[in-house]
Length: 233
Image (cartoon, rainbow, N blue to C red; front, top):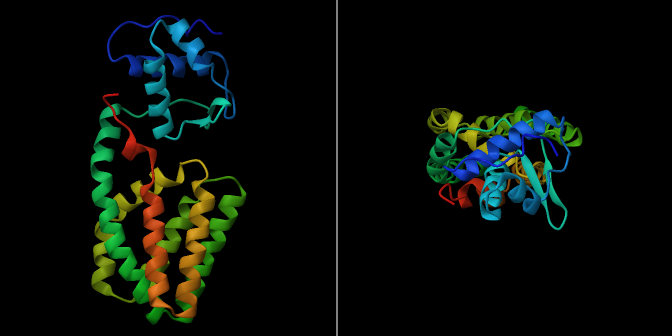
């Protein structure tokens, strides 16, 4: 155990625990896949309660930095613990529900229209985006670019200038929700399956199925740890 895991001063304890863990990862040369010390051991070494350690672990999970495996401990998902300021996480937590509501309303309609208006060129772009997603998932990467290309292709396939303009207005917020979702464990594979289902419905020209598949996808996107996280503990 490194010297970084020494008792912490009083204050916002879980944030201080995170800082100690970040320093420990560096000093102990831990990398992605490394296991962190057990909560009980961390609490003893840091001189805090196990609840403070648990709060710190949850905050790290929210940011996609660690993964808790049931009965198997906590493991790094990246080579470092470069955490975001808590204020930034809180701001994103407050905004995300509105973004998801907007995505559901807008993208569900866009998918429905795409199923009736798509051209051969549109279907080519949708398939091209899926190929990028498949390659990224196979490589073990969050399929950020493939996801972006797919949704852009669906917007184009809907052939609605005004809805496309609305989509562009919230493109950056959509990107944030995409990142939040795709860094959840197991989510890249789920996202790819969702996109395959949306594409199938658009390809066969079934607007009801396309809308339902997009609605289900946005519901999956909404299931992120950030929304259940209580920053006050």
